[in-house]
Every structure is written in C-alpha cells, then in structure tokens.
Length: 362
Image (cartoon, rainbow, N blue to C red; front, side):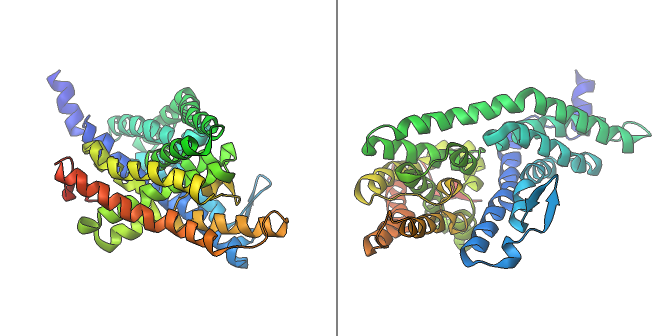
C-alpha cells in the first residue's frame, strides 16, 4: 500500500474532491467558453450584422461547411478535455492526446457532452499520467494508452450521460405543457441551473426546439444565473467578473458552488421570480434560434435571438411591430431584474451567515 501511495504521489495523481470538483471543473468551464460559447457568439454577430468574413464557409469537412464560429463550436470537446488535462498537470504527450478523447466523449454524449467530457477526461488523464515516462518508448505508449482508454470510456459511458442530460430536457418539455405561471418557474429554474452545471443548456434547448414562451422562460433563468452571479460577486471579482460571468458563463462559479452550494441560492431564487414574470407579465417569447434560449446574456446571444425572432414574426405577419413594451420586457428580464433581485436575496443570505463575499472569488 505504501508503494502504491508513493507511486501515485510521484505521478501527481491526487484523488480529491478539490482536484476534480474544483480545479478540473473550473478549467473545463474555460475550455467550454473558448469553443462552444465563443463560436456561438461569433456566428450570432456575423448573422445579425451580415458580416461576410464571419458568415462565409472557410472549411468543408466531410461535405459539412463550417464558418469561423462553426469551427470553434465543433472543437468544444477537445478544448474542454485539454483544459481538464492542463488543470490536472498532465505530461505533454498525455495532454495533447486528450484532444481525441474530448472529441469522442463530447460527440457521443450529445446534449450531455460537457458532462461526459468531465468524467471521461478526468479518468483518462489520471491513467495517462500513470504510464507516462515509464517506458523507453513513451512517445508511443502515452498517446496509445490515453487515446485507447479515453475512447473506450467514451463509448462505454458517454451515451448514458447524454441521456441523463436529455432527461432534464424532457422535464423541461413537460413543464412547457403546464400553465404559464408554473411553467415559467420550472423552466426558468431548470434551464438556469443547467447553464451553470457542466452540461450544455444551449444544446438542450436546441435539441428540444425550445422556443416561444418556454424559450422566453429559459432565457430568463439563464440571465438570472449569469447576471446574478456577476453582480453579487462584483466586490471580489470586479469588472473582470462582470464580463466573464455576465457576458461569458456562470459555469465559472461551479468550483465555488462545490465548495459552498449556498452561493447558488440568490441566482436560483431570482430565476424562479423572473421566469413567471417573463411568461405571465411580459409574454416574452424566444422565436429566434432555439439554441439562444439557453445562452442567456452570453455574448448577448439570447437578446439577439429574441430580436431576430421579432423581425421574423413581423416579416411573417405574426407580429405587427416591435413595441416599447417588448423592449421593456427584454431589458428588465435580461438585465435589470436579475441584478436587483439577486443582490437583495444575496444580502439576506449574507445576514443569515450562509454566504460571504469571499465565497464568490473566481
């Protein structure tokens, strides 16, 4: 047993909740932002402003055309896996081999791709570290073992994790069949939580075609998480935190949530309030691309999606014009109410000694 422990220490294989639940998870969130999310932002900006250099095909692979943003999006699996390997301090040969592993687990995981990448990449990275440098033909052994183990695990567990993520989607679809008040609460909370968890809320919304009032409720929940976390953590994270969480992703807070789940109270309660306001008061609908329902304020894709939906409805004769009330609802639900309500709720949590400012430090 002592020899095993010594060997694991030598290989820097430290089995701990902090290493996997905080370090690896935090790195994965950055990998997701630098691929799927930034790619979606690029595509949305290109389409909205009709910028040829962002909308034109720059690569065709297996008869599939890719724009600049499309290439970034399709590389989300490798980006997340390499980010996890970097956080776990993998040797170069193992780290670079994780690109294949990330692609396989993300592709086989479907909407639960990020969740699959998290589990598969962690296990594979640690196995790769164990064999790295142990033979004279390491340049062959490390990549071979890493890719073999990673792809096998992807085949074995990624589809199940994908189904687990999609089960959340089925709950959301069930919620859309309810009356607007309860639907607004359930959809807003569930999609908002999915956005912050290491699963893809955008992919779930896209797969389910979540638009209309349900899409509006989903947008409200995502905005509550992103704007809520950005504002209540401003004291410790400053303007960098506002941008990275409010325009980037609230998933950056996941390592902190692991350490103190109570920091999730304010954004989640906020989403339970803004969701029904979106459906029952403002009638906010997402009639743009379904993926935007799960984007929140990330690159303002959610808001751009609502606007493009308005334009489409006007062109189709469904909507007469964009009214001041439409704009008021979008601005209040997306930015103002999440900021105000989250601050109030978080202040109550602080007075109850459930959270403190340092808990939100990125």
